[in-house]
Image (cartoon, rainbow, N blue to C red; front, side, top):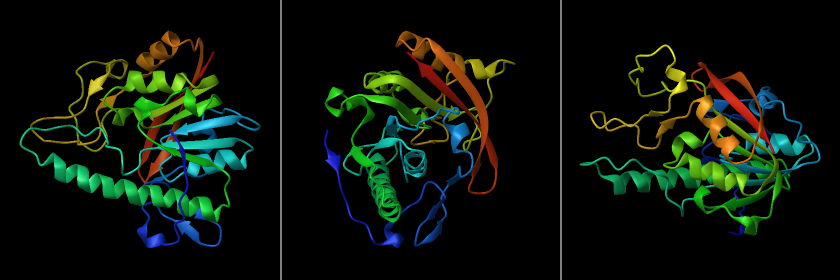
Amino acid sequence: MRYSTRTINDFSDCYFYHSMNLPNHGEAKGEWDIRGREQEYLGSLNVKGKSVFEIGTASGHLGFWMEQQGATVTSFDLSHEQSWDIIPYAGVDIESIVKTRKEHIRRLNNSWWYAHQKFNSKAKMVYGSVYEIDQSLGSFDVVTLNNMLLHVRDPFLAIQKAASICKNEIVITELNEPFFFWNQEKVDSPNNQCFQQFLPRAAKKEPFETWWFLPVPMLKEILNILGFNKIDMNTHIQVFENGKEFKFNTLVGRR
């Protein structure tokens, strides 16, 4: 894996996942607005003076915020050259979906570089699949996984790869509930949040890019397996583009 560089000056060729206040530009509206709640998103972890590897940076708001708090940040995400884990529904033109997704990712990548320039950031960027993370990148004090495990076919392998370059603390943030855009039927149990849930539905042929709801007990067990024996957790609220509030869980695992 290698570090990337890019110059993006055209704001109209960007897609912002996060709402951000950009120097010498103003507000860029995105899908999610985590401004003012970054600390909760990170489980109150102090990143000052630490090296951070941020998986799933998207437009980069959280990474740039961590840099402003005194962290040395390396961001990691897919580029349009890698393929998202798309659910391969029979009878659906998956090739067309992948093509559309790649264009979306290209514009999302552009938003990170546009913001990087506006912030005069020193953060580094690496593109690739989370399944290919390895020691060639070095090791980091903190590794964060930013609400991205629900989008991968193999979340255990993704966490294992993240853990392989983590020296001290790993931060996992995921939705608190599984029922988001697709009106999934709820598990008939008062403890439905204790069970992993598979979200794709053949009858609806959606979602295309989201696989799992990953409950806290499962994530804690995975972290324990990988040697993170002290785990703290908090629940917080983040705001979606329509103003609707959603609960998230953040787990901070320590070796």
